[in-house]
Image (cartoon, rainbow, N blue to C red):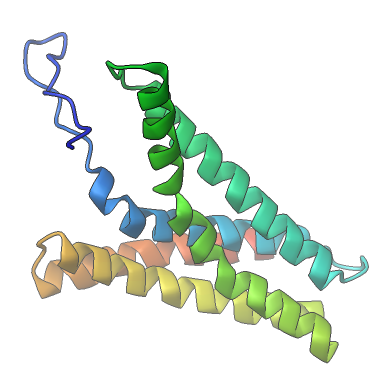
Length: 177
């Protein structure tokens, strides 16, 4: 059963493109990685107590909440004909499509748990985590761009643009702190 609706006309008369829900898992990876980087930078307070397990739980809770909000907003932005039961199934499917946001935060969560187990200092862990996430953003960008049809050179440039977002988080973390 295809859940997508026919294109709706924009105010200018041109049809809006159909949403690409099938590709959301790839884009959710980028979004989740950026989210994890921002949280990692924000939760690390210079001079404060380093609480890696607490921080890991907040990264997961925030990612799950962002995924729920994103899926719900996708669902609410489209009108679905059908019974109440059908709309609930469509909502459940929209929420399920957001799992990549949570999954993309897992490297950061695992790094925080590892830091807690090994008593690693917050500065080193944060630096490694932000660097790892920047590398993951590059990889996500190249992978997603290749997967949706970009040539290798363009895909590498898109990966570089994604990595630049990670670098912006690193710079912001350095400037703010």
